[in-house]
Length: 170
Image (cartoon, rainbow, N blue to C red; front, side, top):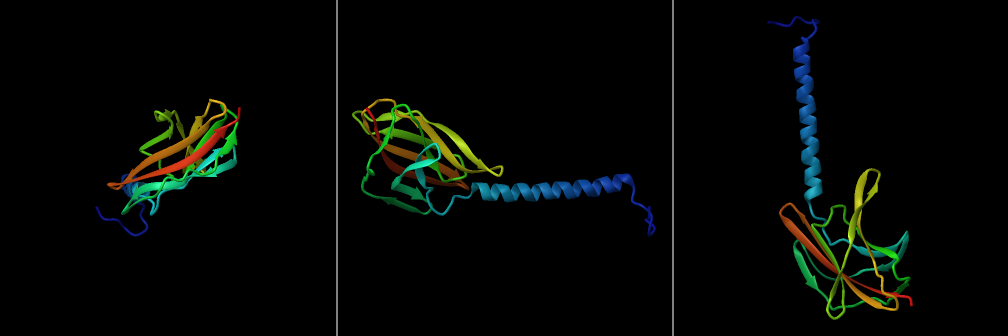
């Protein structure tokens, strides 16, 4: 069947062309988003200890393996920041992807794992960072904290370890 100039396309043909255009657009979007979401950043994320909107301390990056570099430094806990016992604190990880693993420990004898809850930080509908929420309940204590996170992407893996120092009031 030949089409004469000016004659409308059949409904079936129009639907076919619309379907091809939509599927092509969605395919390009998904491939682009997957490529962006899976690539690791060129350096380990920053880690910042916060209470509410207030920055308490910047984490000391001690050790990391981040494609393609690994580095280890000496332990260097920052000067303690004072907080009330039981206060909700969090460590902001400046990476838009959720860590595959995250742990927080307090250096004591023996070392003690601290329960954390990860929550995304969303701005304009996009995840821009992750917060690891926790509480330090014992009064009048120095907490020498070690935070460790692992991220994965495009067959690559990156891990980083930061140190913090918190003192709870009596």
